[in-house]
Length: 173
Image (cartoon, rainbow, N blue to C red; front, side, top):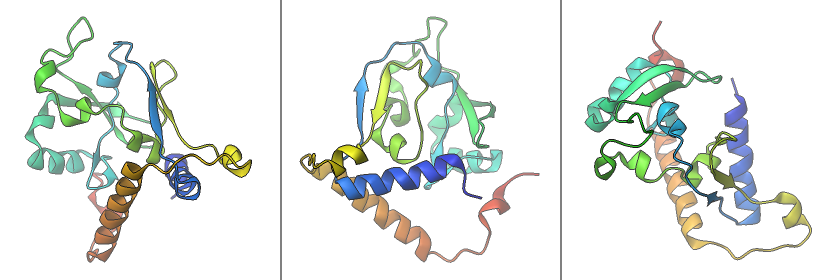
């Protein structure tokens, strides 16, 4: 089933290819801590939607043990909260935070169909199709082209692997 975020992801990637523009992050951190209390994870190019999938991630990345499942979002992805968040809504060990936290918010979130909460001080902005159609041609950002090439290669590698299970077979009952 094609979910809303999957459709947005497809559309946004297509926009970037058509316009040859990268999404970008604007704004600043408000230090509200919400991003530490409502975390969605991606592992091997797929969202973490089951405890089994989270266990697979933990086996590869033990640092994620600081994350605790707290529920699900509207699309069925597991939501996590970081146990290292202090009462003052700041990281208790900022120097030793996860790469996920160091690079938040990443423009790749926009490409995956994710929108940040309105209360967040950051904004993810993508290319404007109507501006492109009006003839506004921004310069091509080479770093974004490399990112798209890398994601295409990863997708091709995943598609080339034999699939003996359906994507839903790792869901827990």
